[in-house]
Image 1 (tube, rainbow, N blue to C red):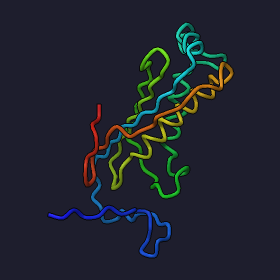
Image 2: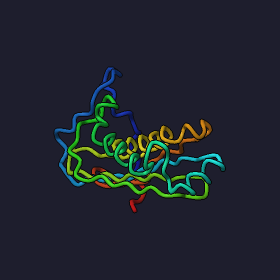
Image 3: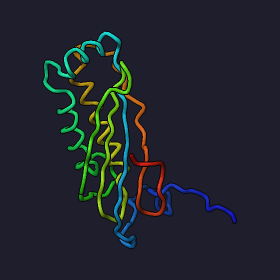
Length: 163
């Protein structure tokens, strides 16, 4: 059986930008999980370990969770063709991946006609940007990324796996 060619969904028949019409889709449980990593220079990582992830600006992890949650809820204001969604759940897990790399995981859930991949990615990346902002006085050599979708459930197809 021949596979249908993939096409960009945010273009109308004339090739102009367009929001996807989801009105005919069934509302189902949708969930997505994304991560973004923050890599610190060795001396900065050592200082953060010693300070329990606190900076002169306050608790790094707590502030990142608040900022990431705000980004999840406002993704449609940041990305032009995202639908405004009711967010039923938003969870962050932030911990050391290795001695120099912080792993930020964001899982988002809704019951709607479109998925929450962009919300999960926005949450993880804005949380990472917040970590950078809170730590930039220590170094500007902090590296963000990769940021990636780990998995999604609901809709036409499931992708990846959710923890």
